[in-house]
Length: 188
View 1 (cartoon, one colour):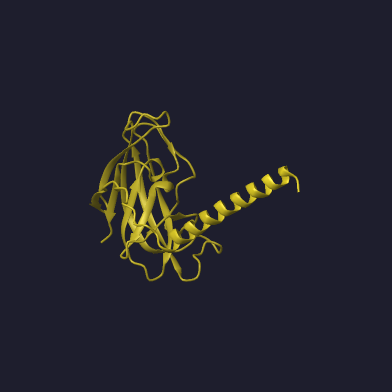
View 2: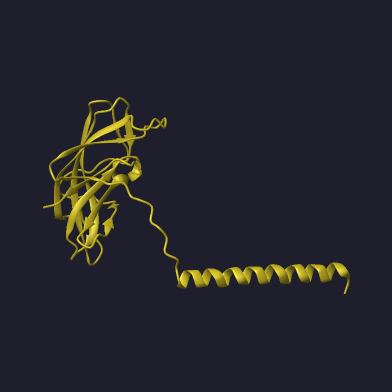
């Protein structure tokens, strides 16, 4: 064999050994995960259903804190009926519908999808994101809501949760849930 072939074989063997060693470490880490210090989650202002909270977020131009919405969870329906024959939860689940009222109280326009910042929380602490469904209780929000200063929008957000889960809270934050300013409505 020529020296070029030997070098390529040696290089291939070294790369293969390094990759295998890396895989072994990854497998060990996956089986025995290291405990990491969790990053602190922003505290949510706790209120009850029916109360309004003014939340701040970043506007589209990146101006943090200029976007301000007065947000109210007006109603929580623990079991909601889908609108139409094809709007049904999966087996073992039910729909929970939450009626939100949003009012732009800031100095910049709101132009976003409100559903990305909402969750419901059950007694076990599990959170559930909104699902795409319409319910007979009333209209939902369009994909994108645009509100100029002083304008208001209202609609239902629908969540698919296990039938046995008891929803105890609704959380909301602007900027698809990434804004540090957040609220939690306790469900009676």
